Image (tube, rainbow, N blue to C red):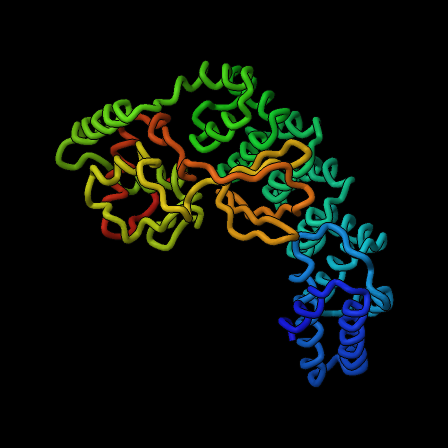
Length: 402
């Protein structure tokens, strides 16, 4: 049924959408008449139709309200099933329902509401590009339950209050929230300049800005931003000879540790901070880069070659793509899917769906998604610990306090 709904919705005609709504209305009528045990089948049918319609409209901020939808919204908005309520509200928002908009905003800002309901409300409002959402997200930076999602969501809005609000609370964030904050601040030139100023003034540790974010900042090709980057981080080595010198430098650093050059548990903590957002190892980590578990990690030269010079050999699946929106947001990540409606980009901290009509440019780069300079910010013992951990045949405990 889910697939059938998607195929019918893909026709895009008022008649096709009205037929889907009529089918949903029939299932809802049975469900409302018998909400008990025998209502499980129509409940599943309602969810199948709603899910199929949601998938069909994925990537569309707005769509014309189908004939009969207002009646369905009224019938199912108070349904005991939270999934049904959430799907109806989300679709109603896409169809321009003012009552759904008000209800979702209220749920999002209610700290006593169910957490999953709040997260679903935020996803729906972001998908609909609610024009009044940025100030609400800024207020939610004080809410521990949804702070991370609020930080990520702020990247979608060109609101000049955002960098000030984020920077004012930055030192109260945990490690994951700091990463989300820096990703958002690196997403727009107008956000990046205050962030770089804060780093120059030691309000943010220069070590917090990882190599992938530095590369993202360089993609703006802005003289002022590049000057600030060079001042703090120096010049990126470009030549093959420079890479070989760096590989030899880190090889010597590793060997200087003796017969047991590192501590694997401390190395896991360094890996968690430096690599885990993009790579999986021992079934833990992100999916932006290749799974490292089965790679040739016992070979020190193999590890160093791939970390120091990740652009030497780049599988097409891991080439970075850069998407620029018409409102000056820049997103760098792996292009997962694209169709006539939307483009889906996988970044180290989220999956972003951007409608086609909002895209100014999209290009695949000749560089790996993995940036250069990952080891530059680490102390020598951290380098030894990281390499030693990567060479382990199995998982080790995380260092205490990490």
